[in-house]
Length: 222
Image 1 (spheres, rainbow, N blue to C red):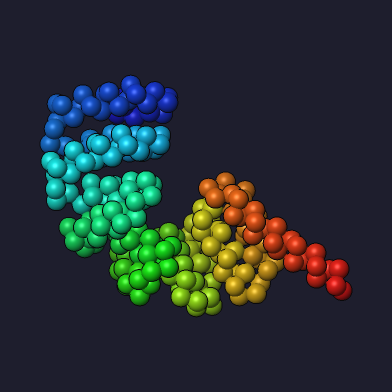
Image 2: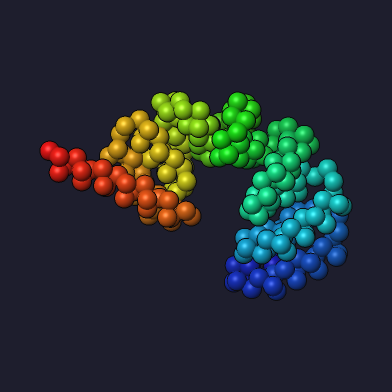
């Protein structure tokens, strides 16, 4: 708890020391390792987080939560193959781990690979968490990648209703409207995603400018 307060106060290294001390007293508490790794990860000290998780996985080799966090970290380190391997192992350890099922499925969708398997994985996650906007978004994105833009739009609208303040989901909805020929709504959601502090701002600005140019040309032609 004290480490949490220190983290909130941006005293990252002091918070880390407190968690390391706690681990020495309670070496069999896997949650402490997760807390320490998440402290480093949330402040972008990815290699420190990786070291913690690798040590933890040796101590708790069948802990699904640790393998999931390790998979997320590998993704942030741009190590997709290792990310996928950890997510697959997480699902083996815990077949009902909705987050891992979704993460694995969405990773495939983002890569444009194994889309049928991605669909199956995400549908399994949806059975566990049917009202999760992120999981619904993932399924919508699978259909988008498959070229089924009508079905993608239907799902992405639903995802947006559950999670309206996520910039990625908002952008995905804009993409689906664009592919369905509704350029006004596409622009609306792209601009909204920009206001929500989208992490990939350059690509989003390109999409917005492309649509504005399209509208300008149409106006001049008329």
